[in-house]
Amino acid sequence: MDRKRYDEFVKTFFECDATAVTEIFSEFLAAMAAEESLPPGHVMSQNYATARANPEIHTLPGNLKDARDAVFPYFWGTDGWSSPLHLENVRGPANYASFIGAVACLLKNPNLCTDTYSQRSNELEVKAITALANLIFYNTQDPWGIFTLGGTHSNMYGARIGIEKVLPGAMRNGINGEPVTGVVSEASHYSNQTVAGWVGIGTKNLHAVPTDNRMSMRIDCLIATLDRLYSQGHKVAYVVATFGTTDAFGFDNVAEIRRVIEGKAAEYGAPVPHLHADAAVGWALCFLADYDTERNPLKMTPELLPVINQAQQLCQGLKSADSVTLDFHKMGRGHYPSSAFIVNQRSDLQYLARKVEDTPYFSDADSRRDPALFTLETSRPGLGPYTVMASLNGIGMQGWQMLVSYSLELADILKRKLNNLEYCLVLNQNTPGASVCWWVLPKGRNAREIFERLVNGELPPEDAHRYFAEVRRLFDKREKTMDSTRDARLSFTTNVGYRPLGFDIPAWKAVFFNPKTDEAVIDRLVYSIEELA
Ligand SMILES: *Cc1c(COP(=O)(O)O)cnc(C)c1O
Image (cartoon, rainbow, N blue to C red):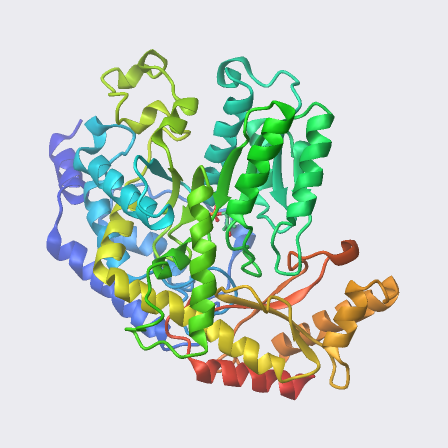
């Protein structure tokens, strides 16, 4: 080998040339600043046509600018979601404390599988997980957990523990046709279906309990479902309580679910199902758990205080969960991936445990603390712990309280304004969250009356579907006529999570995750509806 040439390119790619790196970094920052002056959305259209036809790899070793050029069009063609007009979904711009954490992590690139490969980064994970656990479970004694690749994975951990609880040895022996089932609500996230398929119980063995008009699992229906499953000989492995549904921010009553599953398990002589809270979206309300609404030190508006009180009550319920999914990359405004799976009692992780002999290349793993002995993932990025600790401590408790309550406040303001229009109807009026789901019907219709007739079974299905089509048509009309420099970007859901008489209810949707969105954006949104209907 030409040693000189080899040394040259190793120097280029494996020695940190701070000048070259910061120059390119400044160029990225400049491009981002330019992007932020443009309207949100696609600044550059996609080119899938030849993405597969021309997957070129350069022949000669280049330099860091070649690396830059290889990705730049895609960087430029990707929206950073910084615009306050983005209200589409549970996604906001990532905060810059998280960015600092991410950069630190990328410079070291720790692998969180074991202490040996991560050194103090695993310690940071323990710290981050414990901080989050104290927030969620309210100062619990012996929690543990890990950062996973996303909420779907975190939910999978919960399901897996549940399976092992009702079918000990399943990790080794498999499910072998045993009637193992899981229970969710009809408003739960579709990732639970993914999980049921991937853990091998099968999607048909995941039972969805109907919800009430707050998109909350109906306890009477949960009781009926458990009676049916137990009397048919099913092994109920886990129940997922959704804490903040992705569309409408509905909350299941975790404490009540705990009471019911313990009662039913005792009645049928079965092990208590694992109670997992999918708080991927809703966990951040826990920042408000200790907020003193009497003294109101952050001067929240009087209208908001009852919403905060309601959120505080819901958060109390999380203490009853065995484990929780928490997506920091959603309401934590952190970088992907920073989803955490946390158990209230560390002993629950024994259900996932492998022996050191089963993980041969981690032969020096320490079962007291090396995650590789129970994680689904082998290599794991350190981004979660770094971005989360940097965000938690950069922003601080009061910063978080301001961020979260601002989201709640904007949602509350939009709800109030829509309530003034009789052809509109807010569908998640009583869920204290960051999102609003609503109907827009043509002017002259009374949306509330139509909805009540629907719920009472007085609306023939063809009429219902005609109204649903109007809701959709008006949404499409706004999309076509909107001014992308001024009008907020919304999204549409075909099923808001409450299914009276089995109808999938469609809705317009706005999520207030962007800290720069303000009341003027809402006023303009309401104006655009008035112009349209
Ligand atoms: C987003 C979401 C998930 C999936 O999480 P990812 O991090 O996107 O994989 C699961 N459950 C709920 C309630 C969610 O909102």
